[in-house]
Amino acid sequence: QVQLVESGGGLVQPGGSLRLSCVVSGFTLDNYAIAWFRQAPGQQREGVSCISSSDGNTYYGDSVKGRFTTSRDNARNTVYLQMNNLKPEDTADYYCGTDLDIGATMCGPPNYWGQGTQVTVSS
Figure: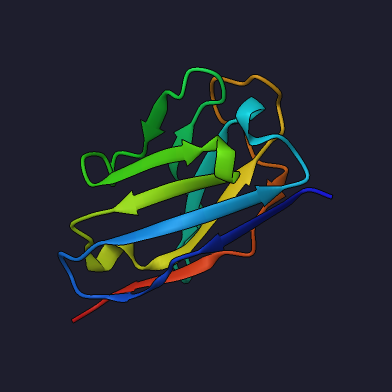
């Protein structure tokens, strides 16, 4: 059974940092690209980042470039999203997802999602 479980969200002041984790099970993380998305209240889900399967290349949305970093630890079946210099507009529910396209170097629209973790940036 494919599962993705996010954690690490919380309340942080502007300029602060958080690290989100996405622990996967039911498939071999090494072989698949993983994406992070976010959704703020009343807004559409927005792509945040992607880390590819084989070469570890990473991609970011324009709004988070230079502030967010995604990485993977295949041995721990975990993908991370390090978020620095957080802004109030980063407030959203954050989700990890995958399309389970084996060997993918890019992230397609996910077919599998975690339950999300809430991030609130406020003073």
